[in-house]
Image (tube, rainbow, N blue to C red):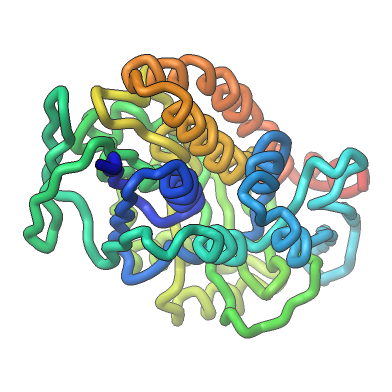
Length: 358
């Protein structure tokens, strides 16, 4: 009989895991709380060994066809360009590709086998396990057994909460927040972005017309699911600012597609428990200023799936994944404060120095 695997989360880590497990002969089910694929977000990078993984998946050429070579223009309050950072998404070694997140997710989904089962608008409510199986109860009332469960459900992972404990035990706040509004998917933008900074704040317009706000702040008391509260928070922090910010605030306030959250990292002593393993941001969120989240998701899922097909002794396989991939994730996490310093200089002098450097 085919071994069965449940993957929680239909984003980059989850879809990559589903792709490989299905290819290796597992019967795969993906459960996703959203009504469809977990779309949205800004352009992301695929780097290093993650590029080797997508090449093995047969999707590298498709990714390259829609890749971006992005330029960022730093502007002042009068919208004058005062610095330019060119060539993002391409380096001399070819080991860095930038792509819109939605396009990457759709490419991976299309590459995956059609016999993967998807349970959209559903989620896991209870989890139990013994030496032979993982027993899961879903929101829709189903109770099913699987050989393995993989939590790929992001920084606010439901699987992590049910199996490993409350999020606050693993969440390390990095001192800043961000709001992203995705433009209409039919808008054809240029491969260029604009960034305007105030001390400890940033507003930007990316390619495809996506907008973003970032700001430093002490930790706030908020509900990551409460969109009305999110709009109130970013309005309070940006009201009265110049440049295009009044228009950005109005657009975000009027939209139902706003994503707001804290910049944080997930740090755990172990990503495994019995027949359950965490991958991607659920296990080791690096924080988006590192630019490494998608690469870690692809690389980690690929390493774990490869190991499972090479060795039937799953406790050994899971432990090896936990031990060998951890230094990779921790190194990526170490970049977060350098990324924040670039995106959110703390003084006008620091802003001017960054802009002059380019």
